[in-house]
Image (cartoon, rainbow, N blue to C red; front, side, top):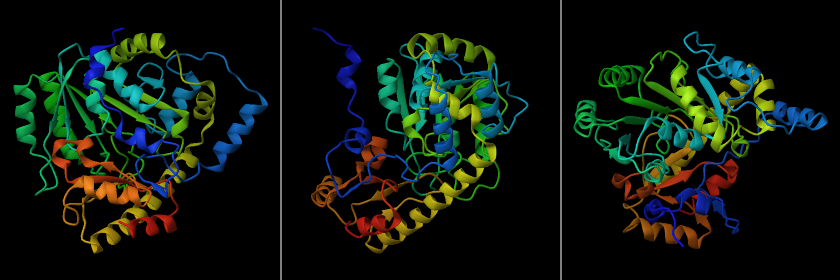
Amino acid sequence: MRFNNSLNHITPSASMSKGLSEIPVFANLAVGSPDIPPPSEIINLAKDFVQSPNFAYTPTKGSIKALKNLHQIVFKENPNINPQTEISLCSGAKYGIYLTLKTITNQQDHVMFFQPYWLSYPDICISLNINWTGFEYDFNSNSYNFEKLKQELLNQKTKVLLLNNPNNPIGQLFTKEQLQDLISFCEKQEIWLVLDEVYKNLVFDLKEPLHEWINSNTVIRVGSLSKSMSLPGMRLAYVQGNYEFIQKFNLFNQHISTCVNSFALFLLENLNKETYESFTHYCSQVYKERFHIAESILKSKGFEVLKSEASFYMMVKVTPIYDNVQDCISALESKGIIVTQGRNYGSQFEDYIRVCLTVVPKEKLVQTLNLF
């Protein structure tokens, strides 16, 4: 029997295969599944849902009530966005990115994203039979050469620039000026800019809401409540783009996924804006504290840690201590500690591991890091 040829080039998810394994370990730092319990309002809404459950199909893009509430709490009632025609719900941001690329590309088109990249980007591209390039990170400036990037986009006739902001795994933020420059360039060159903003509410020191100023027909925003509200299992995400894009996106969406699950929809219809804002701020401060604790411990041991401004990950260069990454991973696994290899996030990160600052309380996190 024959299978899809793309499977010959797709590898198991480095975080999922280890991070969701049921094999008992001392500390699983491989998968970004928040350990902070969701707010009590979510639990109360779950009880309300049970009292009057609805397991019927729902509108593919989400109910008007849910879309309007999402527009209020996530998009800050941005007047440039029509919640009923320019937003669609979907079953997780990973699915949202996959279906977005499926909607706006054809086979052999080219997609570019930044190193380090979220590890599923390449395999999503491979599954769609589209080409991809990971643009290089400048370790000296902890940034990117944007003039070189623009030239590469033109040279490779790039169809989509996929930008993860804040970045997973290094928690880096692009500035408003950098984003404005890239959006302007992409508009002129008719390049789609897909903005993966899953971690936008987990910025350590957020001075103003991210991305709310964006008003461009070439920008597509993909995000979720998974990380910010500690609800990864609910698979509740959104895609926002211009009217024509959302219409075409939902042609695929209605045939492949039908709709988000009715319980997730109920939560979004009734989620309180103040709860959302206070909880996400609380989480961002917890993860900020954990990052600085982990950074202090690992640096004291001689490891190198890349600076982070958001999320709950850190990239750790281990070769100052170990001869190579595999020796480090073997040593950690012998102690029951699971991490992922940095090379899964780009060829430049061969000497790194990604550490998730989740799934263990702070005290155990400290104990775990002292075993490195």
